[in-house]
Image (cartoon, rainbow, N blue to C red; front, side, top):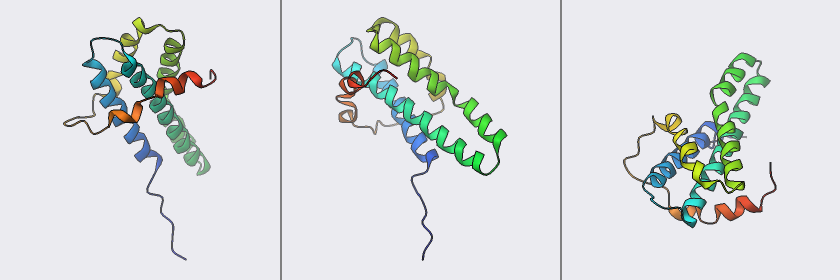
Length: 140
């Protein structure tokens, strides 16, 4: 039997979500008013940050199974911001506090500064309906 290789690793998925957030931040920076599309983009950022958080946990668990507890802990500390950011953004959205969203988004920029965007590759249809999906969820 041949060996099965998983090409959809946590690192690859994490990089894809990082790219998605970076592109959304760029698009949001170009907006001048708050509209439904902006709300959907902010919700998509929250979902992507959650996904980043889950890939970090997945990687940490794998390292802990092998006995690399220090490496797992350091990795989780490095990515702790994703969990904090998703939680704080979600609180702002759920409390309908949209005037503080730009400030929260600006705090994300340093984490995405190393991602170079020459061309926008994410289709806007990817985040359509994300705001209503987020609001239908029960509070975490």
